[in-house]
Length: 362
Ligand code: ATP
Image (cartoon, rainbow, N blue to C red; front, top):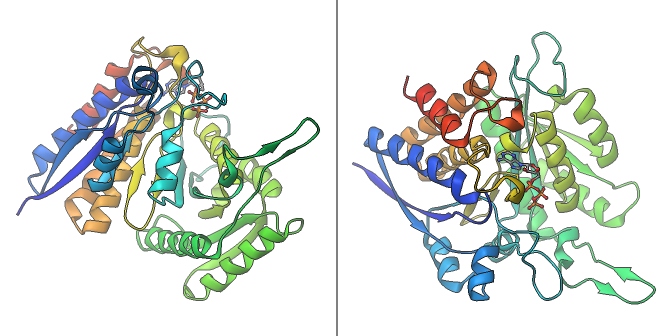
């Protein structure tokens, strides 16, 4: 029997529409060839361009499409020239995380042997770890409500027991699935600054308490500054890292740097009932409309979406297709023949997406 799933598509701003179109085409073709599952795509207008036109950045109708969907595919939103009256940028993706309680920001970092990048991997090593960034509270909690006077500015960091428990359970579950799939040793590292801030000692204590339910996994503690160092010196030692929102924001860009740039970094924001899959990069207005954006981060995010849907809805064909799509994109990068400019090549968006398609259906 064919299972049907509805996907909400936020094509967003800047390069968003250019990288969304080939990604949706690949998903359509995978589903059509599979026969085990069908995907229906529904557009959800939102973002800076939409705000400039209508005065609304995330219309209720689009939020409703997102709520109803089985998964949400989002490219990038926001443009530097379009701002709210208080001067902040339009970022409905952050609002979506809060409104749909998407507490787990999943940022995989993967570098295969031979893949160009800033690090030289030791013989026999590859990088394959996942950073889980809490995405609804932490220092981002006070976004838009910070107090600023003539002489002082304050922002409040918030860490709750409820969200932290969910975050850690998710992270341990992820490490368990990776271990079962042979992709990791089953080590979860809590990244914090518990030596300085009470809030992080609280965070760490919840981590330790949740860990007791996963005796087959190993746990580690690490300070965020040391983690930044180790991400450069020995990133092959990490398996699953879990951290607060702002620390995760910074470390996930470092992770993208390890992969050779933002154009290759996928992500997911996952809650108990909803999930958004989107590249780590922004809308790249400097290259929008030129057909040169790298579509791989978006394609890799779509691959994560298939794997997540397959796992949560128990459709093995989707898990397999998600993995095939990821491996096809990774092969294109490792072979290095068809690369976009950000990776040192001269291919355009369409050519790079076609290379993935060719690798996928070869
Ligand atoms: P945001 O704050 O919205 O995350 P940002 O300020 O980090 O955005 P991006 O829009 O991600 O900025 O762009 C940063 C740089 O990376 C720009 O020079 C942009 O052209 C480049 N870049 C981002 N994504 C891509 C991509 N998919 N392909 C090629 N270059 C990209």
